Length: 124
Image (cartoon, rainbow, N blue to C red; front, side, top):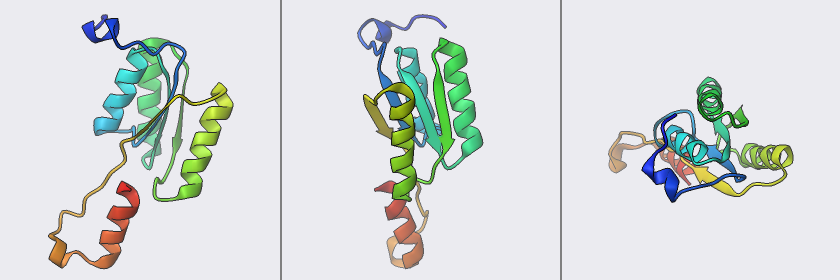
């Protein structure tokens, strides 16, 4: 991997990061940037296959160990367990990124309450 000018000022060697929502979009980019800066990155997402792919891509590009798992961010126990798994595996956690998010695509005045609650649960 070519050295980025950003790497001259943004170094994270020895740091341990967890990215929720890391299978795609901004979360996947956070995984790439954190690992390129030298951090070990744990990737969690509702899309377990995508989390594994992002984790493996980061490990392959950097040679650093990574973790991955399937996680529903709207379930507190799953988030707690992901943090605990990462901290136990790596002896702590330095960085946490929540990149999980959804949208209903509906106008507020026609969004069913169940859909609205799901959006709020995931995004908050």
